[in-house]
Length: 404
Image (cartoon, rainbow, N blue to C red; front, side, top):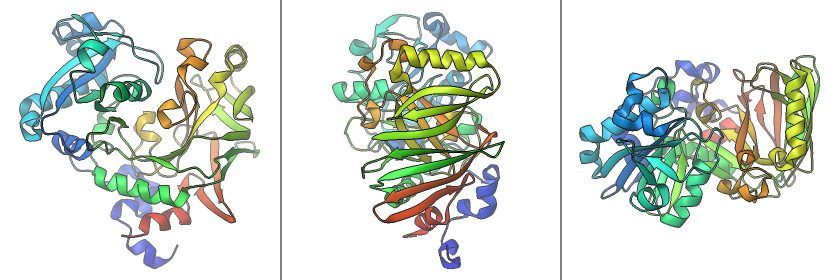
């Protein structure tokens, strides 16, 4: 990348900030600016806030959860969104409503939501009867992502929305405080740089020096972007924080490493788009055995449904909803992908609880045992490096500089 192209990059793409995103300065979180930018127009819209608990009737009654330990995302939903709308937000946006409801926790990413939902008095209501038809903008701020089920419902009932699961103070003060006009523009620049890719190859370097390579066939498809804008009146659900370019793989083969929740490390073998087996690198063999048993029992749980690349410069939040949006990271996902335009739907799984969309994020803080040594994109006769050692390549940086 030339010095000239570097000179037109904004300050948040300076090398010092790219190497240490925590040094980036962010504006103060502004609810009105966020909702107006994301959902324009807002005038005349009715808004509600959804969250989740193990026992929603008890936790919602008189907002009892505010006096209890934990519930960080739920408390932030109340303080920054419920109170923010009530204390001037509605007036500034021209909106109404603002009620907060809770459903029982699904315990899985993008699992269908239960039909029963509870209001602030602990009264049971129906999503299909009392929530989806009554509100124009639905904000889900809970424990697990609800993007897939809400995307399916918005097409039936006509609302717009956003999911912001795991919202903590880092996310509020960075990923939700940025200007989403800029987020959208940067995502589009990288989308165009990767659009209609035929394939992507990822080289993973293990601590023992081994290189594992996964090849994903993309078939020249239109690259998609999660850019945070959900404007107009067309039903849609955004993922916030946003800032991602993604594909639905047509096929995939090779190997990639996996770090399990208990710290166990394994190698996953991929054949014809499906994870077939896991082999222990180090850690607990029982963890590997349990994964293999799940793959054997319900093979759809190992189908690769997404390949994604972060497009933003953000600090680590220890929540994948933000951390997978960081420039220089990539992620794969297994399971349902119908909300991404894919063909994997909940009905294809043996068990309902298996019909999740589970992201596997590769980032320095999340997978320190593995290095994303290189990511290569092939498009016709063109071959470009996209990521080198968890850093955006010269090709991607030049794309971000283009048109500024």
